[in-house]
Length: 470
Image (tube, rainbow, N blue to C red):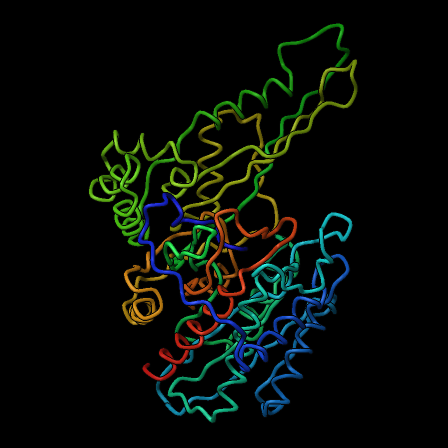
């Protein structure tokens, strides 16, 4: 999941000077670009691609750089031969410092050649951008992690911490085989770490080369689908009865529509509302600051709630997304059903939200069923200074004047499975995106060349900071 911008709330954010443009890529950037290209040009869609092949390509590169077979674990699960992944381990010197884990998913959203301006599985550099499926979500990060380990190996770097990397499949398709989930359940010791670095954070720009902010994702909502269903004996439509499955379902949906889950804040969202709000300089920004100071301020809440992202960032949300019912145009419906998609605020179990939906509906004739897959609901990671501090220190160097703002995602990533396994996971700053989302999950996906190259340097320095100073 490519992050939805949480910083580009106003063009008055902490705008930093654009990083100086480079006339030509450095030799190390050219080497990195080749890794990036190979990943993008390896189709890893669920329908016709192979994460296993992409993982094998990256293992080949690591072996060529000097990694031993014992440092590399290629894995697949029974029944999922094309959905494999790779774990690589670069050993540290300390016997007591816990490892860090670098995570990236290598599967991508479907892409049809006839819909794209360019072949989605050929990486094209054009007008200052890299184009291709996965350039933004999430193969740039995967390429940086592989490139980082290769650079460590070539320079003979001896970190105190062991640095691990997991390239996995399944993040983009809810219900598909998920490599991180499988590793957490079957190879927990292989990925054991004090914390993990993941997608979900990053920077926002004005789309013209100016970086406006950098964020770190600290926590995310849990995803759950529920099916609402009503049943009735039905009958001939010429003789309607008071009991109608469609009307009964409609009443339940109206009650859900009218219900507002209560406002909540974590340490992360409170800090986000305070700092991002202060940066806006508008009415919503002032209300964000007020709400961070006093979550019971109803006037501030009403102002903040006018922004759909901010409204959702303050609470659990449940919304109807699919509807079905009836069996014939001239018959009373025997059944009606709807899908309710919930994004659950950290700290609440899926079962708790199911019970709350039943309470809201207040009709035992409406069944509420949680649909598979059932995702875990881990607590939000801590705002640990040993994690956030190095991020800010490097942002001070790369983008003077910017603050790393912690944020919580309304969506989800593989951090859900790592958090449930006891590995706090953070979506890191670094590469930045454009206001339009860079086509992630859509057509003509792209990443600015400078964003990739400068973000790569930042991410390399960040991993080294953690690895050298446990």
